[in-house]
Image 1 (cartoon, helix red, strand yellow):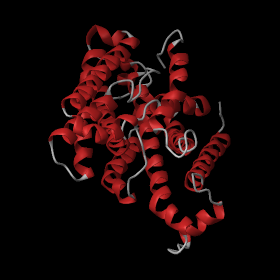
Image 2 (cartoon, rainbow, N blue to C red):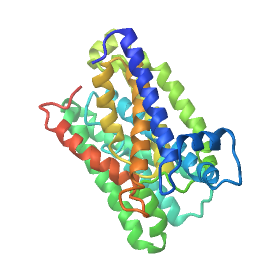
Image 3 (cartoon, rainbow, N blue to C red):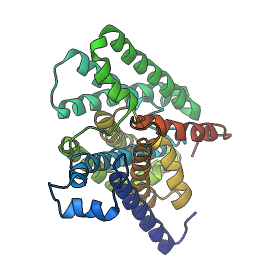
Length: 334
């Protein structure tokens, strides 16, 4: 674990370097390989007559920006969920947040003629909020709150429920299958760069809110009674964190569909490197989450060329053994 301030600063610098490296790799590598010098020229000295420059500007830059945005959103949301619940198994994909957002997006796609991505983002926020409230009421209130595994079981139940509803929509309306498969598999491909613009204000609000709540987040890691004795307004803080989580996780689903396990893996990695102080954990988690999704998206282009494996399948492949390892611990409580 990185302990002293200079070492932690160096650690954040290395996380930033990893993010820059995976971003460049995401833009440079693919079925049409190109040098890093070509990538830099395409970004800063664009020539419309060069096919490599067109590929960079029209496709790969879009994917890299979207992957970084979604990866960081899921990682921050997972970090906040684990701090809020004091449960190392909490994440948007395991506690039903992503599944709820997906179901409402799929329902809107099936029954309404929506054309703006912003409309799907609002619907994803609503679905994430509904799922979050259901999981919280089942796993974090009453006698269930005393058992750390209760919220995980509640999340698994709500996830299964909403995924079953989504599959039911596919059976009822098979014409929508192809469109909904994009969200089911998880992908950052095929979207123009301006598709992320409707989400950016919500992302900015979530980041600012997270920065303002860092002290409260650290206190949330303590027992509720201890936190109250230190001046913490536990209920209000949980509500504020819930809003931030819904903005980040819901927006990520609306942009890229079901991409799991980033919100589970990255918080553990960030805490393993920087300890329990979220002034360091949160920025490192954001950069590591973005790097992980950028790397997974790059790798997805080479497994079965010329086809691409959905990036959500790769994150699940990495995340499943990590989840099993964490779950096998004697207690998931942080």
